[in-house]
Amino acid sequence: MIGNGSEGMEEEREIDIFVTNKCNSNCIMCPMSEGSRRKNNPEHIEELKAYIRELPKDVEYINVTGGEPTLAGKDFLEIMHMLKEKFQHSGFQLLTNGRSAADNNFLNAMLKEMPDGIRYAIPLHCSREEVHDSITQVKGSFRQTVCGISNLLKHDAKVEIRIVVSSRNIDYLKDTAKFIVEYFPGVFCVNFVAMEMMGNAAKNREILWVDYAEVFKKAKTAIEILVTSGIDVQLYNFPLCAVEHDYWRLAAKSITEYKIRYMEACDECSVKPICGGFFVSTQKVMHPEVHPVKEVK
Ligand code: SF4
Image (tube, rainbow, N blue to C red; front, side, top):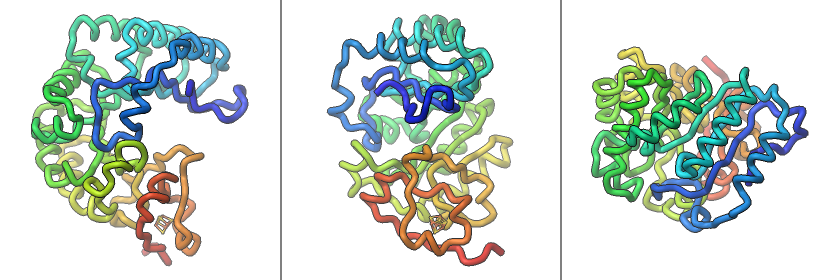
């Protein structure tokens, strides 16, 4: 996979630049499987560069993703350089686990190649080191991610913290929100993310899955802590009927168009046009319960 372009090049508005499938974490709820992260295509970087050269200059938004994109090292820096030079009016987001930014040498090299205003979307699974590391399955990853976020904030980078909620971290959301307010008050926003049930997440579904409404209920206090401290919050991948009406304004239509599905009962729902629905994989694997909204009060 190179990018996500299913439409004609001239119609690209938002694209993914998939740098590498490799990752130095192995998160238990990763939508990629452990096996897929080991596959190697030696031609990939050259193919990706050719794809970037072919893209029109007016792409609106570019997501740089993986795996962990920074693991491509020099190739990652070259790709960022290409993107920065070519797309001077585009918005950018880098999806990273933040661990590479703990290394000051790499951080300095990376910052030189980053487009202005790029958003770093970094998952922090929990304020407790042992919980975070049990989710990434890598000892020491919490310390590196915390150090990476801290380093980026020192350079005035726009950092978004993502909390992917599962049974492993749901009971610590309040503590995690307090931790963020105390140590990272300069973050751009915090997003609570419902899982995409593919890869490792699907494999571990019996131990990880928590229904959306339960996730929202537990996230509510954490949301209030963040919002009252002046930190913006969004809910990613949540169906509206699992969220209290007063919080609908936080629920983003975050699932990529071609992956969105609804349950059959959603046809009776008056807010389907503004509801973000479900990942196709989650709909198939979890058969989530829905509560069609008859009337919005
Ligand atoms: S019933 Fe379906 S369309 Fe309506 S809010 Fe729930 S998930 Fe969304």
